[in-house]
Length: 211
Image (cartoon, rainbow, N blue to C red; front, side, top):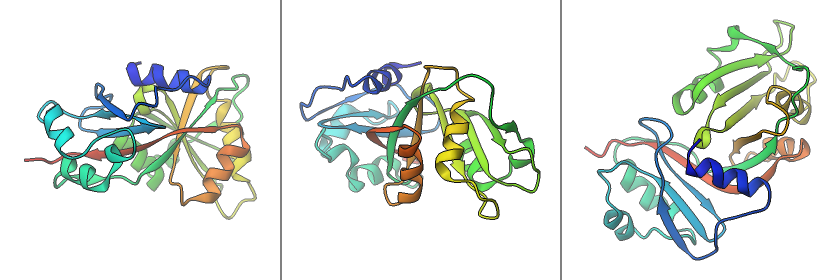
């Protein structure tokens, strides 16, 4: 758990960073992956030491949108891969009897492969029926917190909210868990909100190639 993890845990209780327009550097939580996490009026950047604070300031970083400006992100990523800008949502684990099964056969699902590229210790879960390809990933994700992602199988009648609620049983009761959703993916955002998640910040990740 790093500094950002504690900040996100605080946000889950309603305690947010100061709205001061500032930005600050935080340690990277996964080798090779950098990112910006922006709250209301304050931003945090996890960037390698080869990008100095002066470099980041010169790119216009601030807590009022500057740290998430596409020009800043593109400059820091260089020729590297850039992920979508996502909404960060938080909830708490439900614990109890797990309502989903481990599904190692879903490891090659595109969403599981994406999770593996930016998170650690990715595990895949789903329903018992092997013709049901509804997927839940549970990882050590943003700032080292448990992070879940979902994708429903359109051939089966599971609502997104139902799947998210089941996914929360995979996390110990009361433990803060995060999820990231593209704001334009309204269906996914509604599913997480319906299962009790609350939006607290935005995040954008990249794998830099500044050489």
